[in-house]
Amino acid sequence: MEKLTSFVESFLHEAKIYSNGILEGDNKKANKADKNLTKLYKKIKEMDGIEKLKNNITQKDEGVRFCIAATIIKEFPQLTEKVLKDIVANDTLFSSLATVVLDLWEKGQL
Image (cartoon, rainbow, N blue to C red; front, side, top):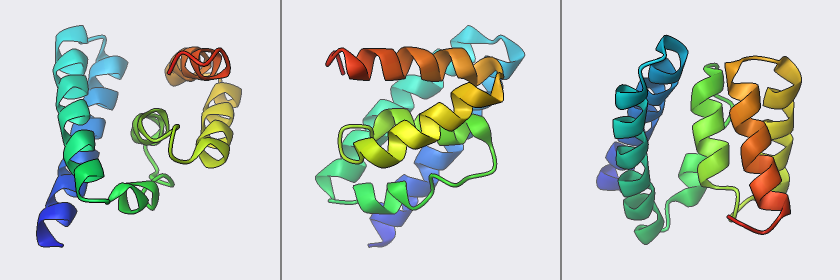
């Protein structure tokens, strides 16, 4: 359980780095964090810890919420669609990213 908690905390940390990279226009930083998020998601999923990741979807940072929602959309589509639609409605930098994820989801491409 400690290992799972560590992976979830690392995911949240990398999501914050991703968020900052997007906001700063630092694509290299965001892309590196995105790769780390994918690796951490796989580890969390292997440990049946997606529920624990889902429990963090109410984070204050919109970029972190986006990362969680986009990552677990297959496991929790109703919840994540709502979160992504809320992000779209905020009309921020993450709105366009959330729009792309929702569009791909609706087309069955995720």
